[in-house]
Each structure stands twice: as structure tokens, then as C-alpha cells.
Length: 26
Image 1 (cartoon, one colour):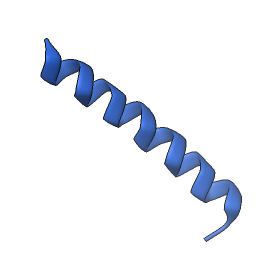
Image 2: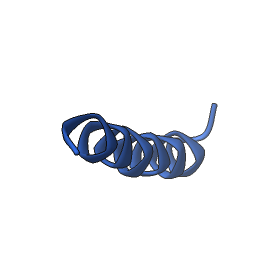
Image 3: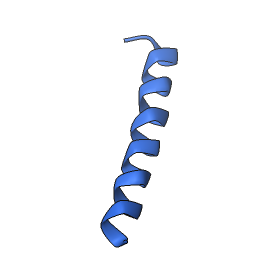
Image 4: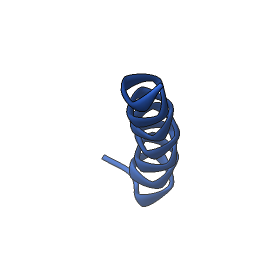
């Protein structure tokens, strides 16, 4: 896997996980 692709996926999952965490709190 390309470093650029890995970084893009990592950022995407970080955003998704953050949204899930906020949703679970509220």
C-alpha cells in the first residue's frame, strides 16, 4: 500500500471514529 493511500485512509478513519465518538456521547 502506498504511504499516501495509507495516510488518506488513516485520516478518513480518524474523522469517522471522531464522529462515532461524538454520536455515542450525545
